[in-house]
Amino acid sequence: MNTKLPEAIKAAARRLLVDLGAGGLSLDAVAAASDLAVSEVAGVFPHRNDLLTALVIDAYNASGAAMEQADQAARDAQASAGVRLLAVARALRTWSFANVAEFTLIYGSPVPGYHAPQETVPPASRTPEVLGAVIRSALQDGELTPPQRPLPGPSVLLPTAVEVFGGAPEAPFADLIERGMVLWSNLIGLLVFQVFSRTHDSVQDQSAFFDRAIAVAAEGIGLVVPLSEHTD
Image (cartoon, rainbow, N blue to C red; front, side, top):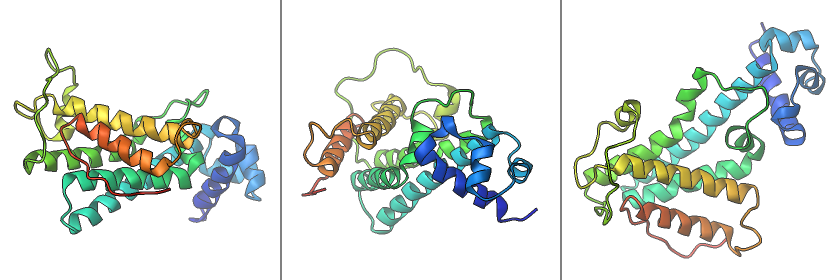
């Protein structure tokens, strides 16, 4: 098989995502868009869902890589955890606006008839793993302020979530993983609002609002995100 064929097929599919959305994607449409026979496309991706899975994995890997590269640059500059957090959040925002169709594929409405298989989990984990690395560094370096209102009751986390973080933090940061998950959901929710133009009727400077929102969300884990003048 032509080793370039899978990439050519995926490239055509990404172009179609812009106009058709994931729900309108079909092997026939991809074949026509890539000047290939349907049999050639089906020889690489036998079902539309196989192609969607490949696109989902690529999108998660690309967005995760953007965050990892931003974090590495911030660490090379010996930045604080707050600066690192803002850097990785901005990197994901930049990727999201540059790849709206792919962002919609992984963070938009579920695609009818498609259920992401287990193989998408490791790529999807790259975003929370970057955030988790920043939070762990903040904890280890004493950059976190203990919460004034610890979460009541026993932990509701699955053991796998604790394992991914590297173990359960001790008091007064025993609920840090839960708070980190709230930060993660705030980041993705904020991007959904901005990418899908939910804040454009009420916010003058989208970039500045994003930075401030990340700073507010970071307060939930006791981390200070330094802000400077920033215009869109």
